[in-house]
Image 1 (spheres, rainbow over the protein chains, first blue to last red):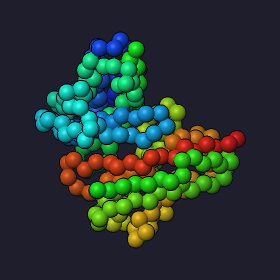
Image 2: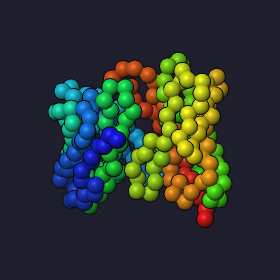
Image 3: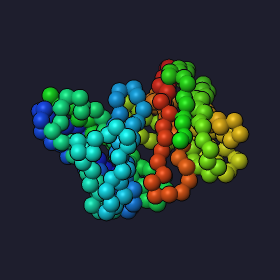
Image 4: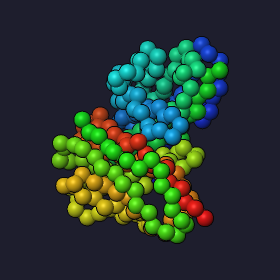
Length: 114
Length: 116
């Protein structure tokens, strides 16, 4: 079945650094990719939607300069958390979709900012 | 805008028993999809079952089945012969059909515990 690979699975870094998370579709072309944030015991909150070669569409309240999204190819999207601070600590999940096919999710990235 | 409501935050079921998880939604769309996702402690999101709104027949996947009531905007998940591995958070989700940017709207989720 379709596989989405997300890397890294866990990252710990100092406050003020930038962190990049990669999301790859391994066996299909992802025309659309999504980035979510999830707090413990809560639902997934959509941060942004990106189409290959286009600028990402951010949800209301999500800072686009803070969370940089690049979808440069049909198999790769990246989320960069710039100048990360402890309040950015969370679980980030990407998902990818080809056309109107079901979305497939990555395994998530646990981000801890010290 | 669409909303998905899962009003029960937690449920518990004895192993081998049957449990039903509730979900209601609100939309003015006529063509859409409904989903149930499972998120075990590993936090991987796993698609359990999918239903197209235009299909009257309820979707089934092995021990998992849905009761889709379009007029009532209800989409419950029944898990038969519950297993310990079914312990997870379960999310109901809605997506309108068509459009490259159609996106999933999730409910708040329900934590299901299967007791041995």
